[in-house]
Length: 398
Image (cartoon, rainbow, N blue to C red; front, top):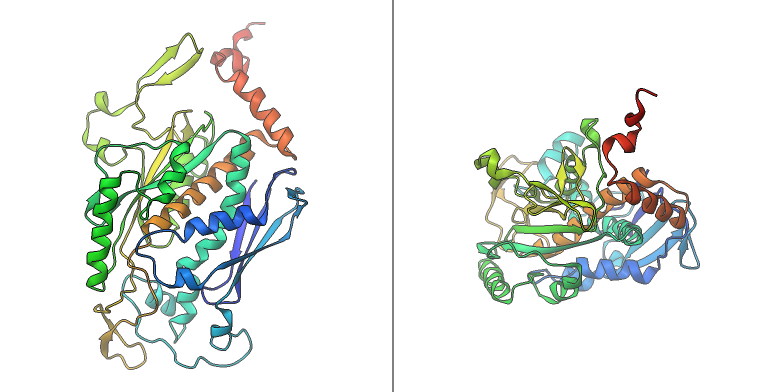
């Protein structure tokens, strides 16, 4: 079972993630983690903080000579901006220099203050901040390395940013990831990229923010991950919860989930065929996003995540209430982005990878990578047997 836990605040000394359940022998380096964290900082419309706050990665435990040991892996991501925040964010007894009492609509500020009894919104926002996703991406780097051992590759691309949308249903392959990352908005189509950049420029001029939609695609997912037997074992449910947990994500769609709701059943489902040459079942469409009944089908697994515009604006205009005086005011401003949709795609890759890696380990098991791969190979040889052969019901009368 794959488990992970993150700790740390946005302007704290650093973030820490502990990942438990990885098999021994998985190749990983600090440079690998640095590379994924650098992808998270990509995107036109990001604020100056992405340049100021670099990610200093340290593998604290669970890795020796570039390979996991089977013990928990601990990763620290140091905050190079810590000296500027050491007094304000000190864990030692004291008081903030200037409490934040004008909570931002659309953020966790007010609800968190009410829930925990805080008088300073910073006690909430520091943990609610999307900076926490850096720790998730570090964990996701390990998950992606594990998936690569069983030939599963996960990538994302931006399909909508503000009013600009990618036409049709362009589906990138894993080989396209470098080209996507070279795009300043992580869009595979140059014409749409220009339209998206124009959207960001217009919003930036107005001091406003933009949301958008990313698509995540997992290639090579084997049939049989997830299960129909319990609500919390369904693969689509696990993916939806994981992706929805990303800060500012307000919608998750598995496959053509929204659009097929308006179709008749004769048009909505992926017909099944037998490929005699390849001795395998095939589907010529993938409206279900590669999941049926909570179980992966072996088709391309894909989903979309919708991110709302960021709650912190460069020109604060959102009405709020000062929690100390109860007087009407305008929400406060800190350094912010015009949009973080391109970066959210990288985080969505992470969450999909963590779910899939966990289900791979649940399905195939193994204390080492070599054992995991052997178990996977044996399973794949058996998946095209008839059901009676697979579960032994063919000799019921014996």
